[in-house]
Image (cartoon, rainbow, N blue to C red):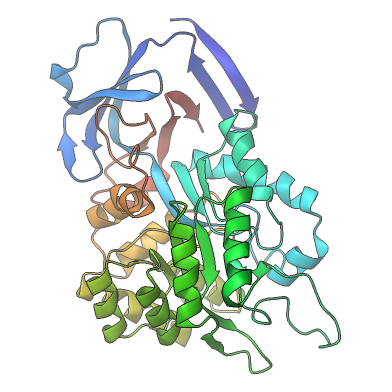
Length: 417
């Protein structure tokens, strides 16, 4: 079979079929987004899956066969909460990234983040805000889609919405107006204009900060009123977009749920009553366990040799309450707070905090696809995108095997770490 080299990067070899010839992948087992199947294979042609089922039933005529002994094949993983334009806070604090790093520098670094994310098996990311980098996620997404740089498919939120005075680098004189990490807007007309502006610039989803640590006290408190949140949701949905809410307080979560936000991010101070309300309204939770774990270590916690700090214990308890309430859980770690390419950290913590490995795999594939409205991915079946990942071992039994990447396929193109 003739192959053409698409592009070469350090530790990255990418090849694409010169024609639309079929590729038959034969691992030991296939996780189809719902169930683990022993002895299955997957047939791909072009950028789509043609068939999946018992390997013996799939015709290999005129197909390139990839025998993948000792492996599991899964749908390409979906990262539910990423910031490709941020890098770990123990390298550079958030304030300094927003205030001191040139946007050209941030975009250049983001191209490396995108490559690392893809090679980690995450073929789609929901990127929830540029954090001071304006609409640079739009160009990053276009560069990936056009094949200029390798990276995952992106669902983007552009600038995100904040209430005036609630979200900015801290510690400056009140006489100084510093650059924001998002777009300030309040009240009827300004909120409608801001939502429409972000959508017009390229936002696939609208992100709103329903609460934040504002004011001199630095305590998280609700920001937008319930009526303002309802207006944001109504305006976004009229264009077919959903709203994502940063919400870490019980009241911020309550308002976001009642307003119709599709997912809530973080949820730190949620209560059983809040989770019951989420279940009632079909609101999903993206718990970002890995961000809390990482920040706690940045602040001095020696994980494994010291007792968990209160922040981590609270997060663990919150996650278990959400599981007990039957709330839909999206896999998303707030990557950017910690290193891109280390996305599996969230999946490992989800298991460590009480979720079954197969449920975690569902969360990172079919559940995220359903919640985010991505009908062409997240499962393995005829007609779906050929976004696949092959790992050593069985992550349905030991989720850490998700790190043991054998190969990644995105749209039928093979990426070899």
